[in-house]
Image 1: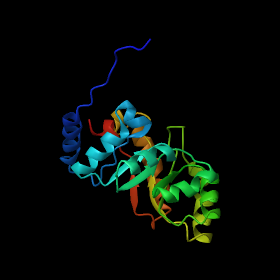
Image 2: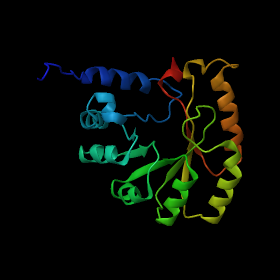
Image 3: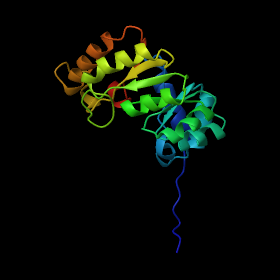
Image 4: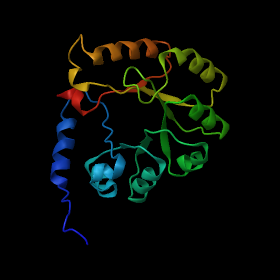
Length: 201
């Protein structure tokens, strides 16, 4: 027996949220995360509307989610936040995805499959979920030197307790300190992203 349940998607609320972040002067680029079907809000609808609002980037968790967003007509860059298998790399190419690499094996597989598009590297600075460890920085440096065709465009991390971002003694401050130490070893990597919504409020 079906139940008369439905979700009403308020695109004006999405637009209001978008404009709110556009007004924050410290934000260079906004990357809306629309994984898990835009958290149940219809990723195709949300991606299409965000593009109309001027979004040039978005992020999903898996390659098949990127396919849905591309088929909805999103032309900007799509970050893949989650790990992926070597067999999925041809689809990263097909759907013009930017993988966020947090595992050595993913990086090795990308090189083996001649992936030359930009990639981002994620560092685990305290979330303890995904990302390279700080002590793997030397390995990455050697890998990048010996595989210059691998285009590491940006570094990122994820805050465990983003609400304490403005607290100089908080967990986020310790994560940021570690991230800066890692980042300093790679002056050639100019871009970074680490703030989520809670970091601003």
